[in-house]
Image (tube, rainbow, N blue to C red; front, side, top):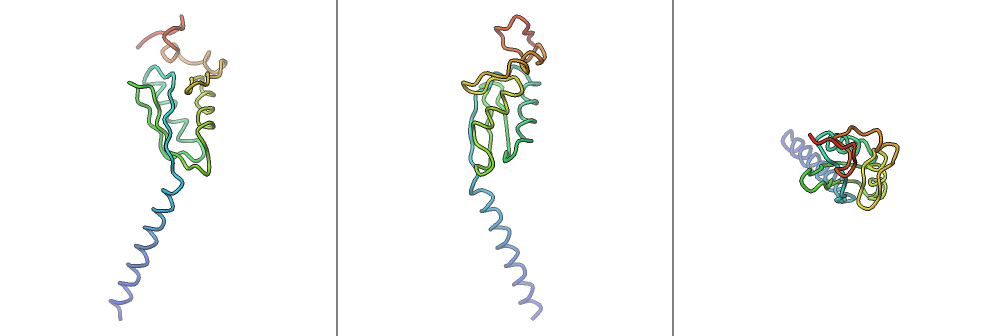
Length: 121
């Protein structure tokens, strides 16, 4: 009887874990957003900010392509909200220009190369 109870408990536990894993991935989507990131500080700022956005599960910025890949819950957010969040930091996101006031506050290394205030690392 003890063995049957243990087997039943293990079976129920496994079903609950697999059900939770399945439901977690159902609403997950991924989007790539082109940014105006210039340096490792930009990468850190954008990734960190996105991880605090509602519904974001993962964010990774590739510095070679300047694209940030964001995995998110589509019930809680959407690509436009993610772009706007990046814009609020002062960075461009796809065809949306960064907030001018936030851009002015960025360190010189984070400014666009065509900006006279830009200083490369």
